[in-house]
Image (cartoon, rainbow, N blue to C red; front, top):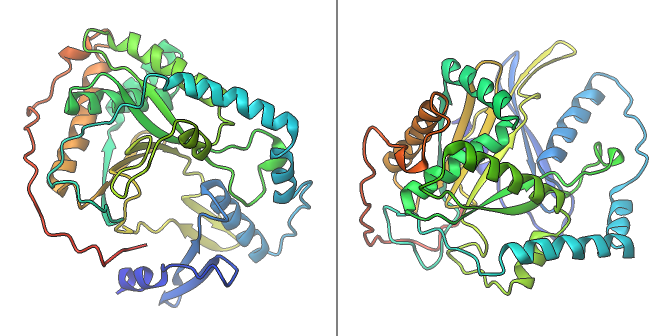
Length: 357
């Protein structure tokens, strides 16, 4: 019943009537409630959501919010300044060079034939990297002087390369887009999507590939001021109803500081709800906890069965089990307990009239 209420609460916004957010409260028991916050991405991003929740409960506790030094409109004006436009053009050139030989299409095998119009219906599978492997991961990060983000992205590239046989992979990843301290407490759309291109070549050692990904990530972050939409236009890419123009898989590293809080006598926990939708073919979310790493794979149900994605998640973990003990392993020698079976696309009947926004 709770899931049904949440699904009915989350519905399309009418752009003729602001505001573009809504809040609801479900009473479960006398001392137990579920607070639902639905914010449209046209006015907010992931960091903004955290700010909204933080400020909401600060006000609930009787606190006074500090005055903001600047507003979102100031950021918009600053973004349109001649100096910023010049920087954005320089950053744009970096990305044009990244894709000067074209944009590779990730030919990920699917269970179902890709429909002409890909709906937003999806699901998710949660899984964990246990404490033993996590300890080894942390030692590897220290030895290789890199970040968990880079390591998780590297292994994701290898996994996709194994499934496709391709050695040229583009994965989308969001960046907060808040380079100045004065932007840290403002609600608005700052996030930008980066298409990070890497080359998981079979003859490479894992440590060598990890270093290459590290350099690619650093350069991508350094040139983050080229907006995704501008790059797509400059590359002359045409999006279709069943594919994104630059990438169909993405990777997100999340901060879960606000997952469990105590505020003014209230205990707050994030409610784990499956929104039954997918913005991408595959989207991997990673959360670092104290002793483990929690992951979620969101997937398009019009392309994949749950069993296929479950195996994909298991193989992702299997790669870590090998590289933490043998970081010098060649990528071609990374193997799976159960070999990847070639998926046979089958024709299915798809009802394009039932869109879940």
